[in-house]
Length: 320
Image (cartoon, rainbow, N blue to C red; front, side, top):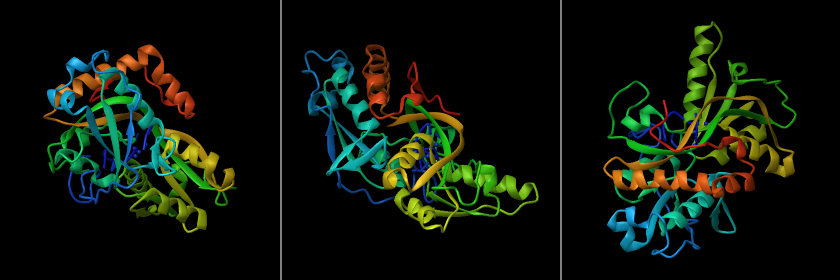
């Protein structure tokens, strides 16, 4: 998510917005949010046998023994991750399944609140977090938006590129053309995301230029923000670009929303890993490079219409 911390753009802008920094309280992805097992699913059920998986021997012994990597996510960001028929599906689960073939383990996804993902990761509830989380310096270093240290942060293995997008009710009744047009208007967004931070940044630009601030309405989940836009209570919503495009294409049979303008502030989505778990981090990077090389990565993106977010090489903490 492309928010200001972890806590999904292109992703979740889930690049910009996956709540969006490893900090506490109301900050991106560090706030304590209830994590639930609703929609838990496994990715990689068809993984190669352990003896055949190319990178199995490089995994920490813990995962070789258990055969499982536990993944925290917020399954509300189709096409990146969402729940269909009780199962978590999308780009991230399918990429995880491809990684599982390289590593010889299964990735088990559990959905919870976005702004609690980093906390859950650093307390050991999850081994990784994968939820359109924008990799940025704040999350890496555990800083709030003013540079105050609030946590130890996380490391990221970057695997996707996304930016922030603005979407409106179908027909765009207010004639919004870009995020700059939101001065003095009501905009809806999910709390703790990088795109919430994008709205705050734009609001400051509005007032600095002598215009009225953006009236930001932040919600616990993205569905509430969408509903606010659909009802006309907000003139626009802000989200990760691939999520906004998918929303415009599918919601109400394509009749509820439309994306306006171009994506902005494109940046990497990353798999978040505890800073102490460097061995897992490094083998995940190798696995991402392996699925890029064998073509399975691109097949996943093409399946979900997310090919514009493809990268050609994984990176560790490549976000700015």
